[in-house]
Amino acid sequence: MIDIHCHILPGIDDGAKTSGDTLTMLKSAIDEGITTITATPHHNPQFNNESPLILKKVKEVQNIIDEHQLPIEVLPGQEVRIYGDLLKEFSEGKLLKAAGTSSYILIEFPSNHVPAYAKELFYNIKLEGLQPILVHPERNSGIIENPDILFDFIEQGVLSQITASSVTGHFGKKIQKLSFKMIENHLTHFVASDAHNVTSRAFKMKEAFEIIEDSYGSGVSRMLQNNADSVILNESFYQEEPIKIKTKKFLGLF
Image 1 (cartoon, helix red, strand yellow):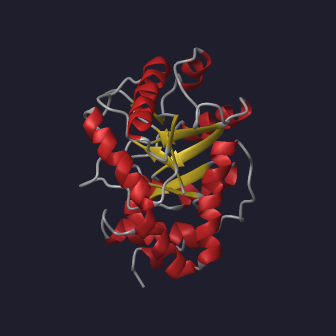
Image 2: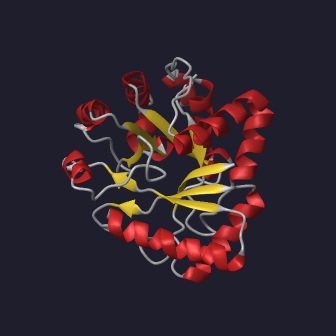
Image 3: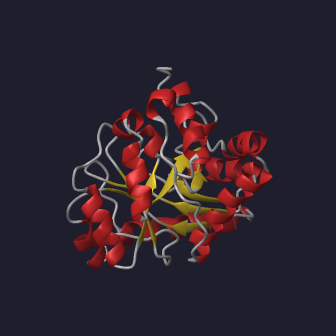
């Protein structure tokens, strides 16, 4: 199993604080059946983690893996908060693609709204030959209230990734319900942990895929896992046509 979104690098954001925390997370990931992690520290106004520091930290984690002979791989990546100079700073080498070498790049929105310039920026990102993956849209208040916003992005060619803990209900029933609707309506393409620790923000990948398999069958579960493989291998994959979520029914108004 591959996890494309995880805050496992020590001491640079709100994820692992120490190398000991990183080791604990690595062992937990192995227990979940995870074989490869893309480390994705935040790049936002609070945590200005740029490419050189991330690559250095990934080497530190590799030393931990080698020392303890752990059967897991950690690759460099980044969770980039959307901002106007994103492409400029990418061209300057400050930003990283998923797995360090693929054409995929993880983009997050502020939790409380969808920036008005997002559609234009996604268009320009794709013009540069990059494939944006919008992370945890199910936890964005603007998309929760109007899922058509996400549909429009997916139709535009943006991919999306939901969080395993959203599927398991750890962020609440409303977010869980929206996550299910996104799977049903082909509005998401990946499930990732977004793990920050092994307690309040744990991996939950195994549990999430068990729920998905029970609800939608092994084919859907396997497809979502294979899509993560494609990110690491820098391959494209088949995408089902997105379907709009019936908003009134989703919100329980009838």
